[in-house]
Length: 125
Image (cartoon, rainbow, N blue to C red; front, top):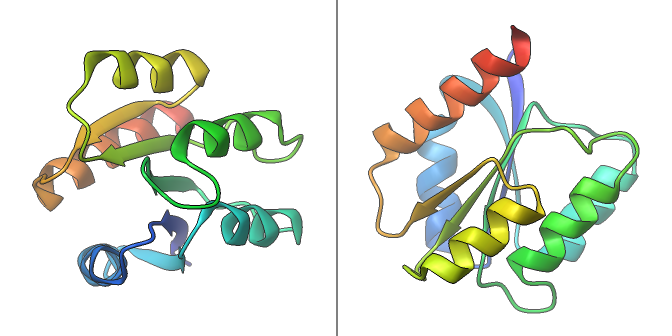
């Protein structure tokens, strides 16, 4: 059975690209914003990993990280933040809050896949 990968991004094209790229190796679940993802998680789902955009309406990446890390069930799920912000302060903020990695858009899907696989390998070890 494939591991579940949750992708949270408000851009439909980005969700489609990531779903297509990761769909071979993962069961991909996509959500358009933080509240949708939190609701999915709170309904008893816990993915193997999460890839989430930083700049989303309603709940930005920082608030999303806080919600995930406060969750009793999924608080340790590997989390990669994607962002168009190439700001050191934003990267540091996300990492301090508990993101496992931060990838700048545009990015190579292959690099993202390797970062994700490395995180999952460490979690299993």
